[in-house]
Image 1: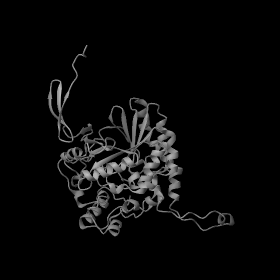
Image 2: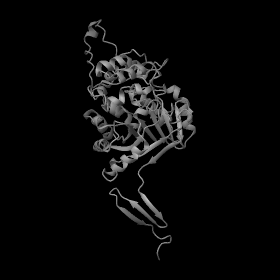
Image 3: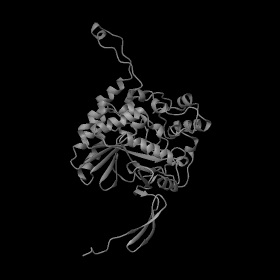
Image 4: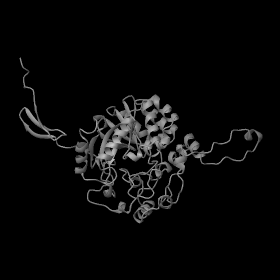
Length: 411
């Protein structure tokens, strides 16, 4: 995307070079103003409806994508402006929907929403342990756009575009690189691989954000996956309920519902993101049979305290969204200023354990560098182990002895 482009179009999100599908043309037509009536027949047609801010395509067309636009909207600090200039030239691109921008505090650079979407000069810094591809997805690519790191599941990267480019993005190496949504024909090798490997029962559709493309395109992709008998579960990894909740339309859920089971894996990080619009999006998904799970990334200075996480997790449960993972942030190059030590997450889980209902308590997960898989970690509650006996420490700090049953049942 050109650095000086002030508009993000639906067509840009859905179209690749040489892909002139009907859905892309329809999306592109949203930008064109109505031509003057050329005949009585045309004059009798209903007037074009004026675009509204609660229209998801309007949000995408008016997303901010340059340092100057951000600066005008938020009066950036020198560190933010330097980071935004760098991002335009060489880093992860800028994109912020008007909706998500509206959640930013214009007077506070430490605002937890602002810090997620506004670049900082710190993005230029690299520290030991930083990786371009922290999850080893390039090494585990089994077909173009298809990654397999586990025996029974695979990751399908369907687009490189998102409604908002988060500054901690695991795939900053590839998102916003100009490709856009991948044409279904170009995913043929990935589909062939899935058909030839029936052990893959779960497919995660991600990117980029698969719901930031047209409804027609995502439905055709899901329908194609449903043609593979061995694919039992499809997950949609999306942040649009957070950054573009207008996208979760009645049309979208009706179009996708025939392909259940479809799970939605979303990505709320802070209570400020729990807006009425986001609530309506999540509740619409739940009402139409989509289980919604949330993966929160632990972020330094944004959500790394127990009170913030408790408020977030309780709010999600009220919306029927299950807090699934609290993720230790991946060691993406240039993101050290947003990462926490592992010990911070363990301490936070200890503070939440026993004080937060179990359905609101996620697993603390480290996705190990190099693509070796996820590892759950947490506080150590085992104080002592002896043959047949284990001493446990409860969240109250009380030590309790648990006695195993005899090796041979009595009698």
